[in-house]
Length: 509
Image (cartoon, rainbow, N blue to C red; front, side, top):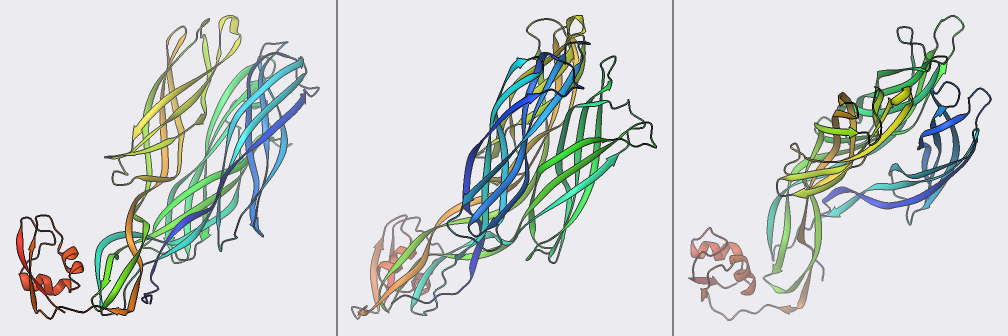
C-alpha cells in the first residue's frame, strides 16, 4: 500500500526546449549609384535581428532578418563609407509538449562572415550565425508529507525559493532625436543599441519596469571632406507588464532582450538638420520567487508494518538574487604596422561570458572584441580589431552557484595614445543576471507499506544496545522499529549523532 501525502509542491522553471540552430546568410551586394567605389574593405559585420517569436500547436516559430554591413574606404576621397543589405530568415522548432503559459528565451551569436570583392562595386558575402532557443515553463515538485501516524519521518528544514510568477512581454520603443546641436549627419557609418533595466517595482499582478536604450552612432558629417563625428544618446523607457502571482514580496529576476532595432535619418522640410528615428523591439522576462522554510522528508519507516521508502533526487533553489555589477578592464591596442595619427572611434562589437562557481561565489570569464577606427599614415583610414580575455569574481552572489540570463556589455570606453602605435583603453563592463543557489537533496517521494507483514516485537519493554561512536539515533531507531522520540526520551540525549561509544535503552513498541 502506498501512503497518502499532501499536495504541497515547490515550483521552479524548467526547460521544455533548449536547442540551437545554425542560420546561413548569403548576400550578393551591388553598391547603389550614390555610393563611390570600394578601394579597401575595413570591416564586414553580420547582425541578426528577431522580428517575432511565437509558440502554437507544439511549434516554436522564430522570424527575423540579418543585416550584413560593409565598412570601407572609398576610392575618390579616401573617406570612410558604409553599405548594407538585409536577408530574411525563418526557423521552426518542434516541442514534445506545449506547456501552459510558457516563456521563450532567444539569443543570437554571429559565427563568421566572409567577404569577396568581384569588382569595386560588387561584393559577395557568406556568413552564418547561431540561433539559440529555450522554452521555459513552470514545473511542480510534490513534497512528501506522511499522513499515517504509524510512520516515523526524518526531516531537514531548508530555505527554499519557490517560483510564484513566470511571465514575458514584447513591446516597442520609438524615439525621434534632434541633431540640431550636433555636427551634421550626412550618412550613418556604424550604429549600436543596447538595452538594460535600471529599476523595477512589483505590485499585485503587475510589474513596472524602467530601463534605458544606450545609442552609439559613428557617422559621416561632411561628405566632401570625409569628416566623421560620434553621438551617444540615452533613451529612457518604462513598461507595465501583467504578471500573475507577483506581488510586493516576490524577489524578481528580470532580463531584457533587444530583439531588433532600426536607426535611420528622417529629413524634415522645416528643419536645417535631419532628426534620427530609433525604433526598437524589446522582450522582458520575469521570474518571481518567494522564500520560505520547508521541511523535506529524507527518510521514513513504519513502526507497525514492514515498509520501503521510495527516494528521488530533488533539485532545490535555496536563494534567488538579482545581480548588477560594474568592473573595469584596462587593455592595450597596438598597431603592428604603421602609426596612429588620430583615433576616430573605439567600440566593442561583442562580449562573451562564461560562468563557473567556486567556493567563494561565481567567477566570470570571457572575451571582449574591441574595434578601433583611426587615421594612419597619409591620413588613410585604418581598422584595428583585437580580442581580449577578462575575468571577474562576482561579489554580490557569494552564496550562489548558478546564473540565469547572464549578460556582459561594455558601457563606456576611454582611451589615450601612449605612443604613435599604441592606444591604452579603459573599459567599463556591466554585468547583469539572476543568481540562484541550487542544491541537490535525496528525499522521500513515497513509501510502500506492506500490511500483510506486521512487525512483531520480542515482548521486551527495553532492549540494551551498545552503540558505536558516530552512529545516528535515527538509524538505530529505524533498525529496531521504534519511535525516535521515545528513544531520545529514554536516554535523555539531544544529540542525533553519538560522539562516543554508549549503551542505549531501546524502548519496545
